[in-house]
Length: 268
Image (cartoon, rainbow, N blue to C red; front, side):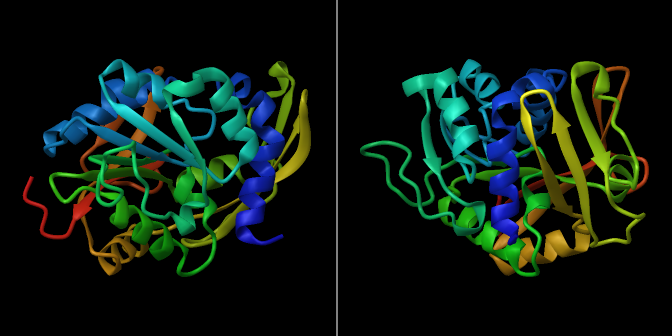
């Protein structure tokens, strides 16, 4: 199974129960109350947002509630069908692989290049691109759609600590009481490793999730190769039901790395 087929297949099988399975993930808190204020500190201007790997649209409500216009895209037709069912014509949805992101026109009358003031790749999107050179493909598409007038891109990447906790051989994530089984399949890995876990249970056809750990050096170099500049690298972890950000990343303490980037030479 090739890399894009892996992600597409996994989420097509997962789509029907995805929202229920992830109901504890509070996007209003994560995106609305934590991440967007950080982006505003970097000069974020409200306008059009492009959500790459949008899934079922978990990020849409926090954006819409704050006055954003939103376009979403995803490699999984199953996830897009769930997003369409929930949001109807309020959101334009596109079936697109993040590694081949074309210039996208937000709406009629809006230029189809460099139109988005915010581009998001949330909840492991970059971890599902597995091959050397994949990050550059993703970021090249992002750059072609990012406004030069203060546009920002924000994305997360899972840390080595998270992979060792949640993808480790025989690890079970404690979903059994809700009818699902997440089973880690990987031995302890090194930076840059590919990790696997199997999801099965109520309402979902058993399938494998494959993700790659990307080091901060690899991510930063890929951004620069595509004409993007890293503005911030934060560590994220959860304590007491709250999302906490640290100004420096610790791959063992933190669960996610949070990146903020812009066109090289950004002056916002």
